[in-house]
Image (cartoon, rainbow, N blue to C red; front, side):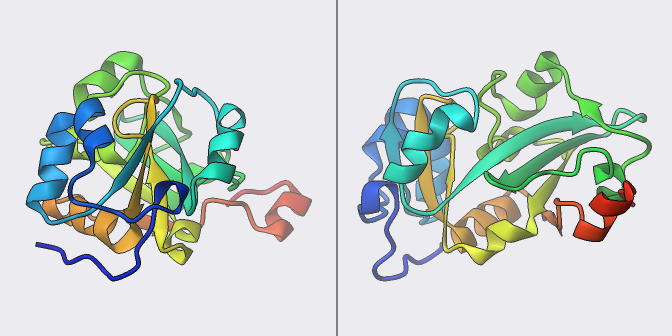
Length: 198
C-alpha cells in the first residue's frame, strides 16, 4: 500500500482522500483499485470537456498540473498512450524518433481505444492504462509532468477531473506493470528554427 503524505491537496485545494465519492460514482472499478493500493484522490464532477481549450476554467479552479493525452499508433500498429502537461507543444512530427516508434505516428482508432484503454474518444486519460491487461500499449510521459507534485487526469470519462499525487500515479502504473517511458515531448528551439525534428 502507498501512504498518503501529509498536506496533499487536489481538486479545488481540498485534501486527497481514500474515500473519493465522486470517483466511485464516475469510475467505480478505478476507485476500488486505487483504494486497494492505499492511493488517495480527489475528483470533481463537471460537464463533459473534449479539448484543452474547453477545460481552461477547470485548470484555474483545480490545483496541480493538468494533462492532455494522445492515443497513437505507428506503422507496425504498435500503440502508444502519450500523456503530456496541458501546455506542452507536443512535437508530433518528430515524436516517433523520441519514443522508438516505427515510422510516423497516426491516431489510434476509437475501437482500439475502447478495447485497450476502456475509454471513449474525448476521455483518453493516463488512468486508461489500467485497462491494458495485455500490455499492448506503451505509456509515454512528458518529462515536464514529473516536476509537479499533483497531477490531474480524467477518471476514464471526461465528466470529471481526478487529482492524484505524482508518485501515487507512478505507483499505480507499476501495479499494472506499465513502466512509463519518460521523454521530452517538445521540440528543441534549435530544431524548430532549422525545421528538423530528430
